[in-house]
Length: 218
Image 1 (tube, rainbow, N blue to C red):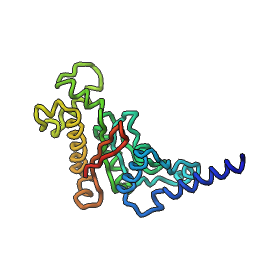
Image 2 (cartoon, rainbow, N blue to C red):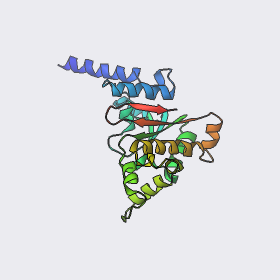
Image 3 (cartoon, one colour):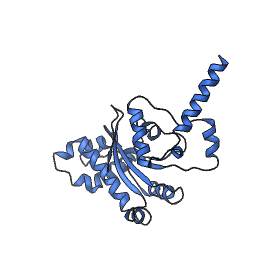
Image 4 (cartoon, helix red, strand yellow):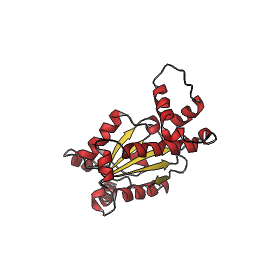
C-alpha cells in the first residue's frame, strides 16, 4: 500500500511538472485554450497544485494571463482553464464590471508581473445581466446591486443594441463582454499604450456553464 501511495504521488508530481506553463512553448492564449479543452472534455490534469508549487511561489508570482470574470461561483477561472496556483491573475466582480480598483489591479499585473494577455470572460445565464434586463431601467432597491446594474446599463454596447436584442440575455452578455474589451483597450495611461504597441493582447471570451466550454472572441 505504501509503495502504491508513493508511486501515485510521484505520478501526480510528474504530471504537474509536465503541465507547468514554463515547461512548454505554448503562448499564454494557447495555454488557456488547451486547459479549457481538457476541462470541457472531463480530462483536467490539475497542474500546479502541489506543495512544491506552493513553496516555489513563495519566491514570487509569475502568472501568464489575467482573467477578468464574473464572481459567479460556477465560473472559477483556474478550474475552467485547468490551471493551478500562480498561473492566472484573477479579477472577479458580478457581471465582470470594471471600476478603478479592478483597473488598478490589471495595471499592476501588466506593469509589475509582466502579464501579456488579458481575457474578459462573461458567461451564459449571467445573473447580473439578467438583473439588468429585468430591471428595464428601473431598479429601485436601496442596495449596492443597483450600482452594478447602472454600470451595465451605461455601457455603450448595451445602449447600441436594438430594442429586440435588449431583451435577449445572450445579446446583452455579448455586449457586456465587448464593452469590457473595448474599455480596457482604451484605458489610459497603461493598458491603451501597451495595447497599441502590441505589447499586450486583450480579448473577450464566453463561458458556457452547461458544457464547460470557453469560446474566445478574438
